[in-house]
Each structure stands twice: as C-alpha cells, then as structure tokens.
Amino acid sequence: MNTKEAAAFIRENLTTTPAVGLILGSGLGVLAEEIQNPIQISYKDIPHFPESTVSGHKGQLVIGELEGRQVIAMQGRFHYYEGYDMKQVTFPVRVMKELGVETLFVTNAAGGINESFNAGDLMVITDHINNMGDNPLIGANDDDLGPRFPDMSEAYDRRLIDHAMKSADRLGLKIQRGVYIGNKGPVYETGAEVRMLRTWGGDAVGMSTVPEVTVANHAGIRVLGISCISNMAAGILDQPLTHEEVIETTAHVREDFLSFVKDLLKTLPA
Ligand code: HPA
Image (cartoon, rainbow, N blue to C red):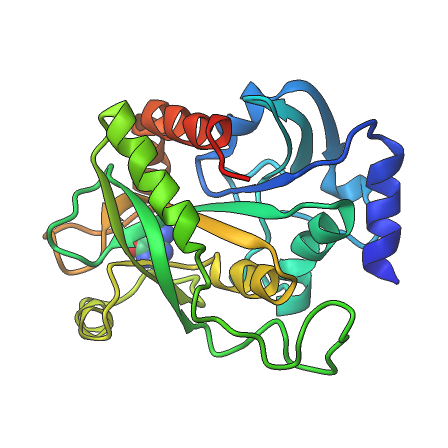
C-alpha cells in the first residue's frame, strides 16, 4: 500500500521512532529549524507524496528531537485549494500514523472572526466546522485504519487543550480559544460570508487543518490545534486581505509561537 511504502522509505532514514507529528502552517515552518539532529526529507523524494506549491511553504519533512521529544514535522502542507484531493491532503497523516505518531500538533494561519481577537493572537482550537464540502474518509473504509463512522465529539483532545492553556499561563502568553472553520479557499471570504460564519459559531477561518484532523481522529491520533490569527477576517476592518499580510503577521508572532510549542512539547502529558 502507498502509505506503507512511503513510511518504509522514511523509516530507512531514521534511527528513532517519531512520537509527535507537527504540521506547520503558512509562515510557521521556522519551528522545524529548531529540531536537533534533523533529518530532512524533501516531499518530492518520498514515494507517493504530493508536492507543495504555495509560497511560504517549504515542502519537506524534518525529523529529529525537539524539547526531548522525537518529532516529525511537515514544513509545508498540502491544501485542497491547490488541487489535491482529500486523500492526498491527508496522506502525510496516514504516513505519520504508520511511523508510530500518537500525538499531532496542527498549526495554521487563520482569519479572526471573533471580534474580540486581534491580528497576531494565537488561538487554541477547541473544535472545528468542516465547511469544505468534502471529507477525506469518503470511499471504502479500511477497518484496520479506523472505524467507518468515526466519533468527532472530541476532535481536539481536551487534555491537550487544558495542557495548552496551562502552558500559556506559565509563559504569560495571552492565548485565545475557539472554533476553527475550514473553508475550501483559495479566495478569502466575503464580508457577508464572515458574518454568516460568526452566526455559525466560528471564531477563526482558514483553508486547511480540517482534513488532517479528521484523518487523525479516524486513526486514533490525539490532536492539538493552534491557529495564528494572521489577520482579522474580511469586512471587520476596513482593509483588503493579502497573503503578504498573513506571512508578515505570522513572522511577528514567531517568537511567542516558538516558545509556546516548545513548552507544550517539553511538558507534554503521556
Ligand atoms: N480567511 C481564510 N483563510 C485565511 C485567512 C482568512 O482571513 N487568513 C489566513 N488564512
């Protein structure tokens, strides 16, 4: 099977088993540079792996040690809006599972819907809404991978959310919590759409994360999600949205983001 071939290829380059997977979103790939004794594997070298196309994303796995944990980081992810199907978008999560990953940290840049947020805030994701009109688990279910009808009532592990809030307190970081809505993209939302998403209960909106978290839940991997609020969503402030702003803001919160994730790893509960 493709997942097994990809995992076998990666495993050949490793001497340890990664326990924590990190998916690093737009502008957040710098975390991978902190990994000690890193082994870098370009996506294009891994059998069956798709290739990343969006600027601000590097397109490689970085595997090694971070804060005493064996981690495998995706520096750059695959987005649905790039034209990949849901199976391709989530392929790396399946590979991580095959490699032994039990905990997944998923990060992204997102627009703030909640008007009490500010650009530059970090938000721990408490739940999500799949507004992508698709699902990576459609099709025949492989019962060895997970159940046909997976439970999503705790898509984001409560203990990990708790852990994250405690870590933020310790570090003196003001961290928001909220619901992430995953849209297809690639357009940013209209102002009317943002108002609608707010009535749905969304706090932040982005174009990723939902597929990977869905497959992680199916596979029994516990998930922690962190959004970097790179901008306020359309129509809230009187200004247009640009990808440059997204990248610029994530660069500003880089230090907070790095210390937060590193502390989360250092003190990660078993
Ligand atoms: N909308 C959707 N995706 C995003 C945004 C946004 O405002 N900012 C960063 N990713």
